[in-house]
Length: 308
Image (tube, rainbow, N blue to C red):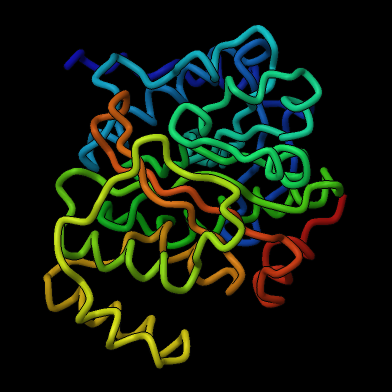
């Protein structure tokens, strides 16, 4: 495990975060959304790598390197970009997403060189009809100083701020129809709790079309048939409450980002789970969300508030 690099100087970050990278202000906390890439904003991208490694190690993952930047972040072709939330008062990056426009990678015939494809197989139907209309999301993080456990009063809106950024992507790229990516479970998470969550995802958000499958699918640690029987005749909201109760009984909670995705749309798809041996042995579950089907209150909050 290597020591994480020192913070990049504020002066270098402020030189790169300017009107050319600015996208919007957030609805709460008056933070700023920027989009950067390694080629044009190398110092900001390096600071993102530092904060990602810091955040992921704290959660039980990470690369073990001095910063978390991989080949997808650092390619000369700027396929992957970084969406970040910037606190202009504290002059800190709060969190971010790495994203890729599916249309860019399909046009280049390099879809087999994506961050998701090294863990999942894509069907021909998915590559032809779905992937060109997706934004692939990954490496989402909120840095430790802005997580709820930090006590920072601004932390309450950190995840909400990130979703304002995703809302801007929907407006700026109107041909996009889907959010596509992975949700992460860390090795130290309660194994029974993990199985309940994945069982819930499989039951309510099944892979009906068989568009995607893990290359090396993970199996459950426990028999959860008792839990499936509890939820199989329940409406979604009641079943969700049962999941939360069952996790609480295990003295664990539903990871916030997974909870956020589960409450965006009832038509979400989940595609099974794979072990990511390159990223601290975390377990990654593929998901796809139709932007059209996102609940109207979420659209009003994060998409319709963005005026170009």
